[in-house]
Every structure is written in C-alpha cells, then in structure tokens.
Length: 122
Image (cartoon, rainbow, N blue to C red; front, side, top):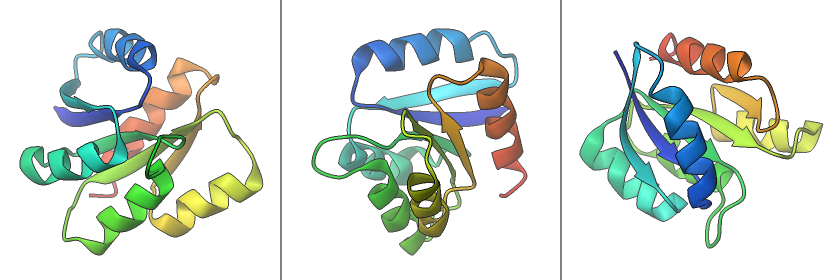
C-alpha cells in the first residue's frame, strides 16, 4: 500500500484528486495539506511514502518545500504536480529533489504511473 500525502492549496483540486486516487486499491491518502508549510509538518508526523506536491502555493511553493524536505532526513518521495510544464519548472523540481513531475492537465494514467514509480526511489 502506497501511503500518500496530497498537497494543494485549492480545495477543489484536492477533492478531485482525492476522489480519483481513492479508487486505486494500492494507494491510501493518509493526509491532505493546503500549504507547503503545513505539508512539511505533516510529513514529519505521518511519514508518507509519496508526497504529491503542487508547485504554486502561497508563502512557500512546492519546489521550495521539496528542497527543504530533502535537507531533512525524510524518506518520502516527492512527485511535483504543476500547471506549468516547462523546462525551467521541471529543472527546478529535479534540482530540489523531486523524483517525478506531472502536468496537472495530463492524463490520470501518467499521474498514477509517477506515484507508483516514486515508491521505487525509496
């Protein structure tokens, strides 16, 4: 079972992703965060296998949070989710330590594959 923390500042996005991911027999959503700062504290408490992290959030973006997470001893793999599918954003995400990057408007199959692939990085 893949233990997943869902991080997005938009409640409708979290709800939609949550409804879809709950259909997967091998994925368990163990928490939801509406900000990167909230996610960082939840990661320490919940120790998810995978963090599905949005890029654009107030105060601290998901890429910055990924970099902070990599500086801790957390073993959670981060999959970045973004509406910005460009070389610069992908490069920043990779440099911060994300194991995968998925475009928000992409196919659900790509998202599920990225989540499952992320577990192999643990």
